[in-house]
Structures are given as structure tokens and as C-alpha cells.
Length: 275
Image 1: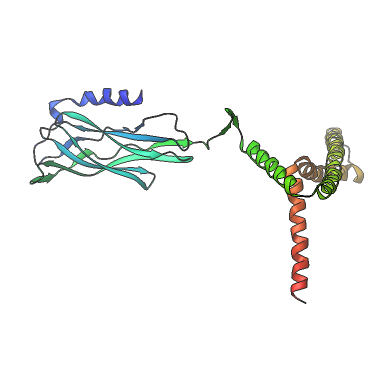
Image 2 (image 1 turned 45 degrees about the vertical axis):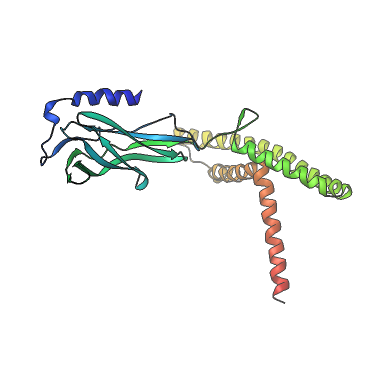
């Protein structure tokens, strides 16, 4: 749709006043804002074409070299001939990548004449507007069902666990499984308890705030106990939120365990090496 709008607008330039003499300044060139794509919306890893259009309103064929950019990176170069009083499409292939992009095109050389006698000329519009687009990271599809990065990681972990089970002796795997169940039970039970404590701390925080506001409204001075009740509740709630986050996430919880074991082993190794 965008392509057809650009071509329609370009027809407005079919006017004798847009012609040029052999030594004059050309009043034509790239169509302003003329960047479009062979496929939209843009998807990561798709191979598409980036298009622009050159309008030649002069009386001679126009030779141009066009560079395409993503921000300051050159994506490709094309040389084309735009016949007199005609519109010429220019395109390059592009493998779409995720992230922010700013796509544009620029005419870097423009000449008229034959190969033996070329004359450099100036164009009134030698650059397109920048087309700013954002391409999200492609969602992986497994068996026709879109999955998130979290699902992919979970699938890889489960696959790795299955591979380990095949090579680890049953007696060892059963012992590891028992220990894992103990740790997992500890995580779940303590997470449940901390969530309850967190709700209780929120309630205490609310009561302390209401009591403080009531004393202020009544012009009554708060006691030392009342003044410290709110801050203590805030500090307790802060630590409960952190613990709840750690225990509530398997990735964070077991990641910390692995990190702690790594620190311990590295400390033991350094002590042995320095003896």
C-alpha cells in the first residue's frame, strides 16, 4: 500500500517545470520518504527487499548510484538508469535483524549522457527520509505453537536432565533426586511462610500509617513505640519481599545455590594452591 501511495504522489511531478537543461540543477531525484519493504511487518531473520524510487523529470536518461543505510551502516549499493520522464524503483536484499533500525537511501552520484561523455549533475532531493522501525525478537515455534524464551530454557533444561539420567547410575540419581526433593520442599514451604509474613507486614505497615495519620489529625504526639513501628514494618517488608523473590523463583533460588557452591569451591581451591 505504501508503495502505491509513493508512486501516486510521484505522478504529481509529471510536469514540464521539473525538466532540466544539461548544465542546470535537476529539480528531481529521490521521492521524499520513499522507503518501503517487500514484506511487512518486518520479522527477524526474514529475507526481504528494501525499496526506494528515483524520479527523472528531465529530457535525458539519468544514471544514479544509490546507497542504502541502517543508521550509519551501509546495507548495499545499486546503480540504475532512470529514463527521461519516468520513475525507477531501486532495491537491495536485506536479512532483517531484531532491534531499532533507521532505514534510508542516498544518491551518491548522478550523471546524464552516454558512457563516453557523462556529465555530473545536482539533484534537488538526493536523500530519503529516515524510516525508523523496531523489529522484535522472533518468537520460536515448536510443533506449530509459539513459545517464549522462558519455555525454550525450560525445555532445554528438561532435555539436559533427561540426558544426564541416561548416563548417571540409578543409585546415584536416586540419591541426588532425594536431596533435590528435600531442597525443593524447603524452598516451597519457606516461600509459603514468607508470603504469609509479607501480608502480615503489609497489614502492620498500614495500621502504623493510619495510627500516625490519626495522631497528626488529632494533634496528639506519637509515642516512641508508635514512631518506630512504621519504619520497622517497612524494613521487615523490604527483606521479606527480597526473600519472597528468591524463594519464589526456581531460577533465582538454584542459581544462588550454584553461585554459593562455586564461591566455596573456589575459596577451597585458592587455599590449597597457596599452601
